[in-house]
Image (cartoon, rainbow over all chains, first blue to last red; front, side):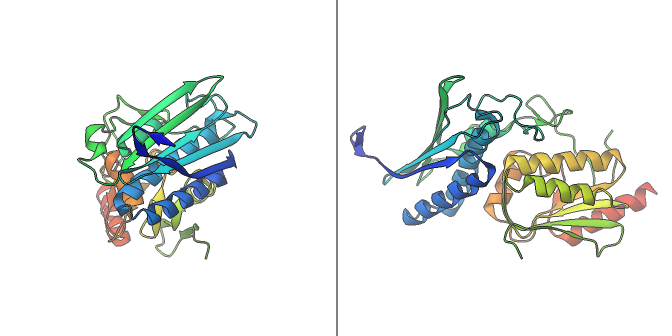
Length: 174
Length: 124
């Protein structure tokens, strides 16, 4: 299999029930692959976080009350690791999920800030694919290029407009 | 002890400490929320000790932010202790979300205790 002339083959392909306990399994697989590729520890930490958020989105939002499948593919070459997370449901567009406390809504901003490149494809009805690439050698910090803005909102979700409120411990916020 | 355990340390009297170990994500978030509920019963403050944590996702941040808000609403002090040698999987998410000054995040558990005690004394 070739892509842009360089050899990129799926080295890990996982299909798991889209349940919370599966997300840690995906992280373990990624850590194993990163170890084999001698990926830098800080980049692995970013990759684990971005991939966790993509998988959590599938678990929390893709299938409503039914349990569908979480598909993960990891591709590696000498330059980068690419992780593709797919669902076959309504995908990453946030909506009311199971009767769990509402998500913070930071998944996509974190994926953008922690990956060197990312792409979201698909939508309601067709399933969603999130593709994230992590370079072995970074030119800069993606979190500086695509910073996370805002702060915690009144409703418990992340508010991109919010000015974070800083208080001393024990002090009442104004 | 479970590698992903969450325990409540009540050895500091009026301040309760939630001690978080290992990797925490949407699988362990419900257990954390239960412990935080317990922690919010503290008399004057709540500390989240992350020194032994190795990974946090956004669902854990959400649970911690909610606990922080509820602590403030009931006049409790709140602080997060990162430890002296934080793991990138913990430090990075706190830094890029700008939440270090918000929680606030301090170094050691003792530092967090001092901050809460000083604020309680100043407010009294």
